[in-house]
Image 1 (spheres, rainbow, N blue to C red):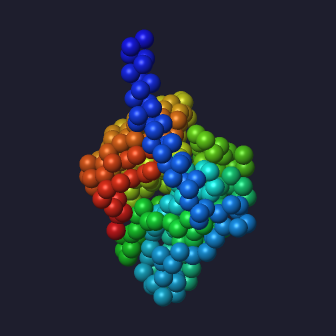
Image 2: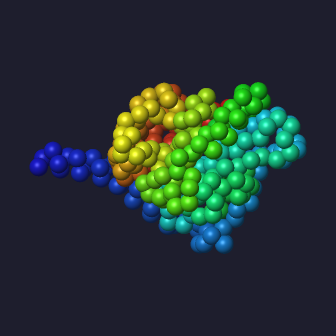
Image 3: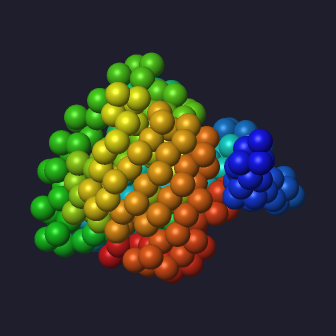
Length: 251
């Protein structure tokens, strides 16, 4: 009984308390869009127009999701542009519309009114080499059919981007701890490599798990909430709040 009590206290202190505090802060915000229609989906002006940016670009972005779900979750997506191309290509996995959405929104667009931030930016020849691998990873995503989407614990939009990172480890990036669903794995695939392939990941179908990797750091997952630390680029990962510390972006 004493051991169980300690586990409960750890869960409350490590996961429930930060979630509750962030929920309170979120409800006090006055800039949260009340609905899909009322939200701003326009470009956040993070990327120059494709015609003014001749080099190849690969980018991974993350933005808070809408309404109450923004308390604890980000949505992530992938953007690519070959050298000389006249437009960017954006890939999202969403719970509505086509299985993998292509160019559904501006490449650097706000998500439910929330401005995105870059998780990875790669330019020039390095990006040019990665783009064919990324396009192949998008095409090979195993949960791309209609109905193969589960907002929680996964597979969802972040499971999709984690699949791309796993298929293209040279992206050398880790999704934010608030990318709910990034750690989802089917039960028959309980243990494997982290998306960066620099460590080991254990996941009980996204309900609980553990990851230890050079890129991901140390992460403890409980019901999709992630607590941990990043040693490579020092930071702490707090459930619902996200990452606090050095910028993790890969340039």
